[in-house]
Length: 497
Image 1 (cartoon, rainbow, N blue to C red):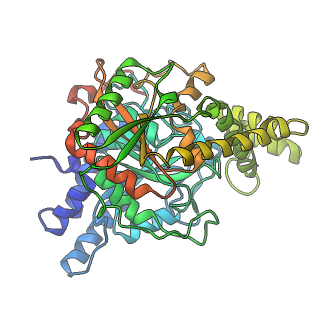
Image 2: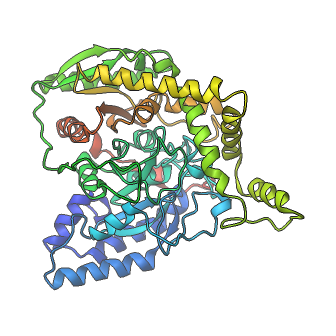
């Protein structure tokens, strides 16, 4: 019989509602595991043990009184630390927000609380979600539970590591260029980036406002659909929130793939792709054929411009969004100041880390006089071509299948001194953000080094339901999602930071 901390979210909910176990028991089981493993993995930057237990007791009391409970009844959830939580710090893993406690709750946090979830704490990330390895956190690197000498991916590395190490039943992450899907792939879990506008961004600390999207990181596809059911809603507080009808993402899950057309974009199977990853993804395509799907070769001709386009648009939006951190209204304020200009410059110099400073400078340059047309305007025009590529492709196929990351997880420090190599870690994920379409990463194999390999599915705008259905069919036909890190991979290390 599984330990309580090993259960998926829907298994937790079912057992609690059947009164086989209490919400408090499940919560305490996870908190005990966090106390043992978080010093090694460093998935959490804040753990609210007292609040979580109090919340679980309240849920148990309401169940005893016969109340109708929400979809996430008693499920312990981790929240990425760039999503605002009332009464709990939201630091974005940055010194500039080290002591910041938001005066309001993010819409997604309100939603999961209304659905009777238990929030365990806040997870580590690359500072302001800028990174692909969770090495850029001001509060220390998160380690991959499969091999603690390796990165968990980023920027939602804390959330992905928490799910892989059984430190939460579900988690929320954010995805600007792959920050949910890439760490999910490297940690062997499921990560969903919904369609842009499907989930409210109100209360998500902005990085790239036209790219950012909150989504689930979970142990299986069913849980991803369950969590999306709760957080997908129109929100008048977010001007980019779409008033589209919200289906029941769980009710539509099925395993019959007859008549489904799955596209393999040729540009995603070229130079730089690990043989192990390509082999696993092509084996997944073969499995889909066994299930009745038709595999179609397709082309996304502007893919080669994805990285350059993304890093112009994302950094331009970031430099604008981060201008609000000036040492005046909130956040870090320097002690050494003689005038207002020095207050601004020293506060930002002391508060921001190297990667954030690099991206602010890149974005400032792209938006500066004389360069705007050459960089930002050109990138915006190329972005329109990405959307057209996907629109044309989805006239031929229902979904696309490709790798999530070009390689399994790399060693901590391996790419830290080479920003471009790090940026290329997101080469297969950023196109979905540029086009605003949904994408999901799920496990599809294990490398010879014993590391998880992830595959990515993408679908058309607001075809999140179809995306989950195709993902679920593969998951039910395989056992990759059931594999977890070997116990000895999680043993204490003298060099664990």
